[in-house]
Image (cartoon, rainbow, N blue to C red; front, side, top):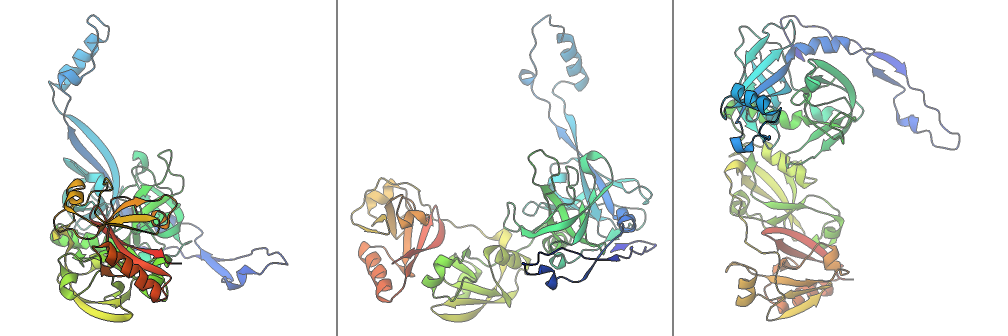
Length: 489
């Protein structure tokens, strides 16, 4: 909701009847739809109310001039010779040029904190904030408070003479697909602009582990980056960040980082000048249908722990092969959700993590560390080998080999690396179909370590004797572990 010295009322919605024709032979799908749906007659009052909180952002960046040998070369006596010489003289010998970029943002406090995208202000030497016409200050210079490239968010600060109009965050998780939203900003440098649309989808991921984007068909173009996406209560539910377009212009597929992620990141940037995300200290993968039976689960739920490096989870007793079912009392459905809720938890806090292990549920208290301080440990494993090895066995359309000194040296394995190496994987075999390739390391079979072909064969046979339809294998590729379920039938 907008905050200002004079609070304005939002336009009331007008109810209209929903009428949908139905075929006589088809089920009437409208029976489950409310008989009347409200929508605004106009967005004018809402736009007028929240506009003073939206700002245009102009950045200036120094760009080094190219050296003389990088400048255009023209033949002596050419009519362009004088033109390029005059141009160089005006710019000075290899002197800097100035580059400008445009973006958007919004004010979140009366004392001048402003939210935008990191890519809008990245590398800027000077950041100027232009306020909505009639909103008090016209243009102010801003300083960077903090940035987070992982979510493409940044916080700026200006020093206004008086209180600024500002807006509150809204609960993006309450926005439903089909809800009206307004996007505001500075598209293509045209100045303050408003576009309306609906929430097209929730929970979109583009490129990062913390992604939680709202997809909208409200027009978003270059220059809208960093601007707010409002719900009908005038609350910010997203930060406009990206578009999907083959032309560079809006085709109705835009993305705004949800307030569920953005609000917490912004609070940390204001308080610390940087992010301080919780770190559980596990490598994980989603549980798919192929893994359910091998793990002894009733259905695909939780996330599977593939590795536990030194850190909070190792200290708490979490093990590779555990399935994390809940974190701090919240059920876990997939990797993205767990990463997001852990990142939002306070560093140093103790949380209960419930895991499924050997047919039982265990609840273990874990004290979270800080993700930014954690070092990513990786086992140096090469991806190719020459097929050499002392003893091999074949199963699931692949050949695995024990590791001797020659093989260890040939593919660059560390002295402490144990397991079996996949030396062949038939293109039409199940192992290949499940993603195994030459050079992969098989670390566990049936959740037991294996470093001999006899142990490998014994674990496969034990799974068959137990009546299992699949056997679980832990494999590594270039240091990254994952579980694979291979069919025994």
